[in-house]
Amino acid sequence: DLCVTVPAATDLGALRRVLLAALSQGDRIATHPSIAIDVGEVQDAGIKVLLRPWARSDVHFRVMVESMERVHAALLAAVIKGTVGAIPARSPQPTMPIT
Image 1 (cartoon, rainbow, N blue to C red):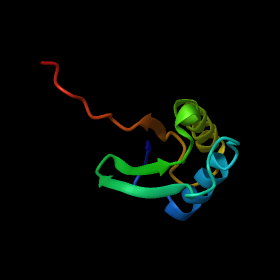
Image 2 (image 1 turned 90 degrees about the vertical axis):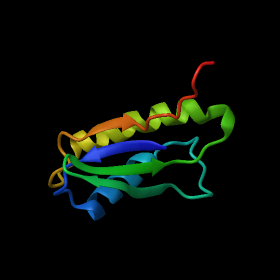
Image 3 (image 1 turned 120 degrees about the horizontal axis):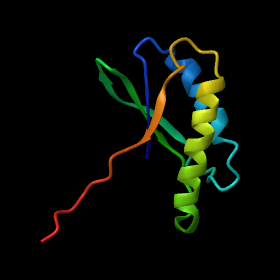
Image 4 (image 1 turned 90 degrees about the horizontal axis):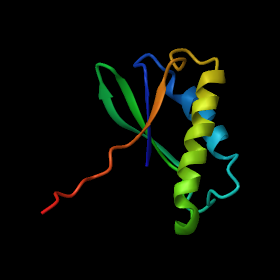
């Protein structure tokens, strides 16, 4: 999953359209299952939106990097209320204690 935090006043429908357009540009992203875009959390600091573009395991990391770059560029270019200044960030990965 990729995670993007946007201000609470963001038009989520418009944001979803921008994110889908950005992610659909990736030629390595699988079309089935389709790209998932969901609200992960609503916080005082904003809304965390989870993005799940699907890819084959051999290109997964590259797809995640390229997807985040495209999402970042799309958010900067978008004229959507509240999305300017949104900072894409990777979702924290679970860690295992070293024993």
